[in-house]
Length: 61
Length: 220
Image 1 (cartoon, each protein chain N blue to C red):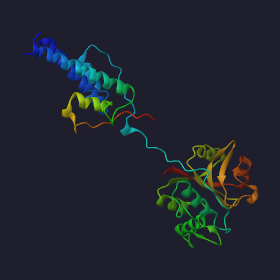
Image 2 (cartoon, one colour; image 1 turned 30 degrees about the vertical axis):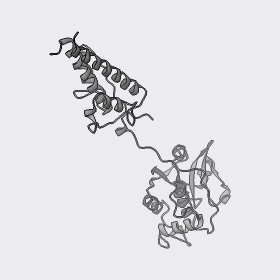
Image 3 (cartoon, helix red, strand yellow; image 1 turned 90 degrees about the vertical axis):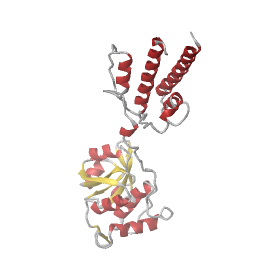
C-alpha cells in the first residue's frame, strides 16, 4: 500500500467515525444546533455543506 | 490512480453522507434524494419498510393553556356578569386589558363589548349567544366556537382545559369555565351563590338553569 492509498484509507476511517457519531446523534434525537448533532457531524464530514442544509428534523412531543 | 476497492468505499461513504443529510432535511421515504433511496443504492437487495416520523414542519403547534386558577372577584353590578366572564377568560390567558386592576380591566371589557348597544344595565348582554364576547376575545387572539351544548358536551370540552364562558338561559348569568372537578364543571363565578351555584356546576344545576350557550376556546 503506497502513501496515497494510506491517506485515503485514513480519511475513510475518519468519515466512518463521523457518520457513526451522526447516526448515534440521530438515534438520541439530537439533530440540529451543536457539534454533537446530526447537522454538526455532517458539516464536519463535508464543510462544503455549510449554508446548504435545510433541516426538518423529527418532532419529539 | 485510486484502487477500485478504495473508490467503492468512497462512493459508499458518499451515499451514507447523502442518506444522513436526507434524514436531517426530512426526506425519509420514496425516491431520490431520500434516505430510503440512498440506503437502497448502497444495497439494492434491501427491502425497506420505510416509515416517516412526524417532522417539526408538520407537527401541530404548541397549545397555549390558560391559568385555571385566575381569580374571579365578585361583580359590582348586576348586569356585568358577561363582561366579568369574558374578562376572566382574557386574564386567564394573560391578555386582560389591565393586569394590575381587575375592575378597570372589566370596565374596559364592557366598552369593548359595546356599551350600551351590546351590553347595558337594563338587559345585560343583548345577544345571549355570546357573539360579542367572541368578537372581543378574537380581538386579543383568543379564537372560540359557540354552541348550545349538553352537560356531557360541555364537560368533555372543559376537560381539555382550554377555558371558555357559558350562560344558562334560566340562570340568566354568565360564568367562566376553568375546567372540571370530579363530576362537575369547575367554573369562575362572579356571583358566587347566585341561584345556589358557587364554583361547581353539576348535572342537575345544568339541567335546572339551561339551556346553556357555550363559548369555548379553540385556539389562543
